[in-house]
Image (cartoon, rainbow over all chains, first blue to last red; front, side):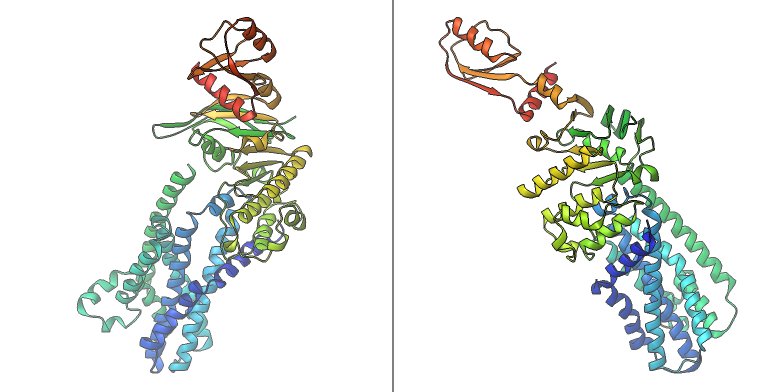
Length: 243
Length: 292
């Protein structure tokens, strides 16, 4: 049992890094969108745009890493076999978490690097660290949403459905353009989306303002709802597959 | 001696379908137990419960005295699924190593690689393996934990004849060193030499059960075939069937039966005497039990 956690986590990372079709879009897509539509300018404007695309990157990893991989894994014989091994669950969950963390930090790091190349943000290194940390915390409810998708979609439908939710949520939430620049109708829906509140949190962090408590409540509420639905899906899967 | 696995009064339904309806069995250390039955007989359902992958509606299972889904039971158990698949982007050596790390006292990786013919495949991605290679990796994993009870679900599907022989030799050594095997298979001729105990399950119940010697003794009957216009009075006869004027007589004493046949004066021809293989014998027993 020596090094079981290290082995399972290490192989999970290897497995993902050996699949460019997974990590290239995961890492490059947010950075690319940012370079094309978000980067530029200086000062506060540059800070806000960078913060927006940082959580856009982190949320994407939480969404796809958990959502799509759960949907795909749970249909395999390997998953069934793995359950017959002693103490298999702990290392597996740890591997998912570490992989999500590694890829979200890489993906967010790339956005920040591009931000410094293409624009002139005013954030200090400490502020950047705070931004990254808040992005990871804010990603928790989206991780729940990813897990929920993983249990309620099939291997084939998961990627499509994840995109269908992720892209509109990012747009409506104001991660691609500031909420003030959104069309009227979209701006009306925006305050009810989890992405908008994720944005409010990181914008506050980037601007050195106190984090709005209201947004934290919204995110906690969304997180609880997603987690509950994810749990129901998990129970349903356990019942059909392993009852 | 504590049994490797003991199952008592096991039952499970899926809605109206009673997949398993009252199974009792036990497998001792050093015993190869063959679990047979047609598809849909309830075998997989029973094995899932024994592996702790699903819960029985009623009944008890104990693996060396532990609940089948407990860590203690899992450490003592190995398993290979019928259609193994593996993460395509991991290598044979990596996967085997990961499985080994789950156990406190695994078998040496070098031994497993050699015994299951995986030496040259260590650095191959699992996604590129052939059916037989996947099977061998699955089998190596089943023995990797050095467990004392190993479930083998159709273990030789996809293996060529030399790999089959090597595998049965390995399994026999495992059994002889005190390991318990629970094997399901459709290839009865392969298990004739290793099986100590046979259990045939049908419609969720155990239909035929016994030691191989015992079953062979029960089925150590011969089949006498001949064409004749009518069937004379013969003895000893276990069972008779007839098709297009050709009789098949199952008898415990073919010599006595043939003497009686000659003395009866019936004009028989094309006389043929065969002994039953394990497979025929089991088919025959199934038929007899079904007729009762």
